[in-house]
Every structure is written in structure tokens, then in C-alpha cells.
Length: 142
Length: 142
DNA sequence: CCTGATCACTTAGTTGGCTAAATAATAACG
DNA sequence: CGTTATTATTTAGCCAACTAAGTGATCAGG
Image (cartoon, rainbow over all chains, first blue to last red; front, side, top):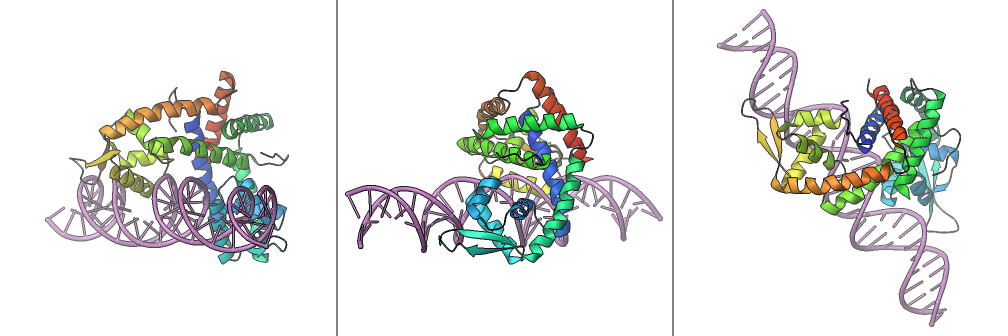
């Protein structure tokens, strides 16, 4: 990647993200997932029966995005949606046995990606990078 | 944003990028652009008559992505494509007067976004962040 | 009660991004 | 010179993400 003095940080951020997403996509295709779906699986692994609204908040995406992703993931048997018994508006999401199996594979892939991403960075540098990224996130969401 | 001890850097990176993209998208819509198109306009401002292959390399995306983006941008009169006179395979891309006008507005918006993104970071921290992101990019593309 | 506001989600339609495969033109090689 | 390989771009089809608008269920006020 070329770097001019006036290269914006925003520009660099976009490029790093594209590269990261491409790597993630390549590895996820091995287990039949698409980029983005891993977030839902990991979230469901933490806690079953999450509502779609909670997924919207956690993934920082809009409701239609979650709706369509879940429809596709349900059609391939990764997750299951059941209506809440108390409030007919909310639908809760659960991992199927197949979804759980895929999540196990996902876990090791994600760990490998993490190691690849942070290669050559000391623990201190990683902590520093994390702190700076948190600052950026705060700047961009407040 | 919540932070558990074991939060992966990759996860944080994805969240920061989503937030950044959302901010960019919101501002670009003011001037009738979609997220991603700003990269093409800025590149064309540097140099007119760039080939699509060069855009593919510079933007780190695949050829079909550039093709479709240019088709849309051409249909709204932002850019113009002309066949190269020596090699009939290559098409060169130029800014239209309208595209140039939009680029001027884009420039100030982009600058504002940059300031917003890096708010609260010292020059040293910005340089450090840049260095760390370059390292990540290198890790993810080699 | 019942009517309007709010909330959870879905549908329709757009774009950016991808892969796989097709087209067309140039380059390379026997 | 003709045949093959390579290169530049496009087409078709998929998914993630968005906005705008719609449907249903719940909640709140009169």
C-alpha cells in the first residue's frame, strides 16, 4: 500500500477493514458462512434466545439487515426463530445443533484470524491499539 | 460499546469500521453519493484518465465492483468512460464537470470527518495509530 | 373501552462487495 | 501466420448493509 504524507487516517481505516473483511470472508467460506454471519453465531453462543432487537444493538446494524440474515441462516438450518410467549411482537433466536457445530469450527478459525491480524505486535502495542480504536469508536458514535 | 477482557481486536476493528462507514454514509448522502464512491472521486481528482484496473488496485476491490460503481456513477453524470485509443480493451475514467463540483464538496466533508474521527488524539497518537494500522494491513494482505 | 402512539419486525428496493463465468482484444509462441 | 495464453472488462447471481414504508401487537390517554 502506498502512503503519502497526507493520507487520511479514515482512508487507512477503510483499507485495513477491507483487507480484514476479505480475510474473514475467505476463511468463513470454508464452513459455509458469509461475512457478517459470524457475529450472529458468536453472539448466540454467548446467550440463546436473544431477540432480534438485541442483535440489532449488539451488531450495530439496522433491523432489516438482521431480518434478512436470519431468514437466510434459518433456511440453511443454522438458527431457529420462535415467537416470544409473552409478547407476540418479539421473536427469539436459537442455535440449532448444526449451528452449534459450525460455531465450534468458527471459534478456531476466528482465533487463527486474530493471531494473523495481530502478528508482530507486542502485548503493549495491542493494548495501545485497542485503546486508540476505542477512542475512535467513541468519536464516531457519540 | 461493551468491552469484555477477551474482546478480540478483530471484533473491535469491525465495529469501528461500521461506525466509520455509517458516519461517512450519512455525510455523503448530503451530496448524493454512496459510501465507497468517494474513493473513486478522490482518486480521479488526483489523476484523470485512470484505467479501471488501476482503480481496482487502488481501491482494493474486485473488477466487477468497479464496473458496477462506474456504471451507476456514469448514469448520474459524475464520471465518463472513454475507450483507450491504443488498447481497445482498456477504458479510461474522467470526471465530468458535475463530478468535479461534487468532488469539491466532498473534500470539505471528508476533512470534517477526518477531524471528527481523530478528535482527542494527539499528533503522536495519530502517528502511532497509523503505524499500527499499517502493520495490520501488512499482516492481512501478505 | 377505544383510539392513537409506540415498538418489533418485515417487505421492497437501492448500493457496495464478492465469486464464477463470459466476452473481446492484445500478446506470445511455435 | 495461426493458435494459444493473457489481460481488461462485463454479466449474472449471491450476500451484507442501508432507507423508506408497511404490518401487527402492545401500551398509554382520554
